[in-house]
Image (cartoon, rainbow, N blue to C red; front, side, top):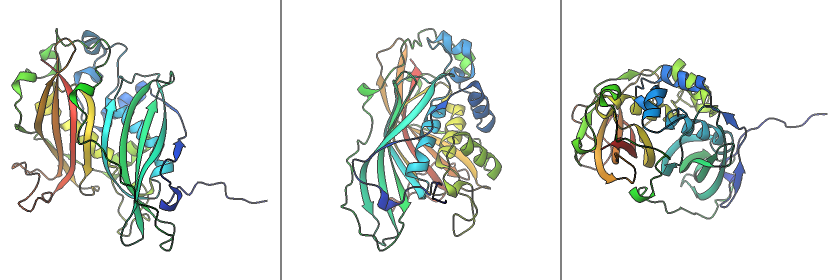
Length: 346
């Protein structure tokens, strides 16, 4: 007796608007995740680095980086949403609802909220809204994303086009402040920077200076850590050029870690307003980052403010910090354009 027991992943034709997908498998966060994250990315933010520092600002037990939870939750969606992806295109309306701590088990579900076949008929774009909950059923993080997915057959009829309306940004009033967060006795010596909320001005740009060269071994290990199974990240046979595509989240975490030099007190990622993977990244590229302050907001928590930041990752350093040219197209070398909110001390 024989039968098809392997998962070939969903193609564009397999998605319908309103479809709900419960993703396998739940994953428990451990201290090993914290250690491996620190080994792969040059992160030095004090809250996820030090249990004592975290407790001093009201966060005990000791949370991991917000992006650890995001990557784990995102990885759950890949076998069902983007196993046959050409590329992940962008994010919106991402909110971190509560800190993730070792021992938390995250499960993820997604709802298809949009579909649009591309004009050449070989691929289509799928929009999903995903929600990760912990073992108590509490929402840890939710987000929308859109991904370009191969069709099974070019002759398959196109579905009705549905493009969802997504907010340009999470409103400052809708940011979720972790329970107990208190920056009123914040230790800037321990955090590594004296610069707090009032030291940043809207429109200011910050060159984070340092660079990290991508290697296949590291980005593949990181992507495996999050149980992301997308073929393009691992197989030299998945793309016509024979190159392994670096997981976009790997670039996000590298850029976020590099931003410590200049934004060391942007301790907690509160929300991701929008994100675009502008160009593919490959082993051999050296990733640099710069940030722009887009907005500032008061937060209803002792000593806490919020900065809205644009984080730009580039292949090669651009000291001019140019996002777009005169034609409004992204400047050469731009890999990532990420708009997010971070909690900082006031």
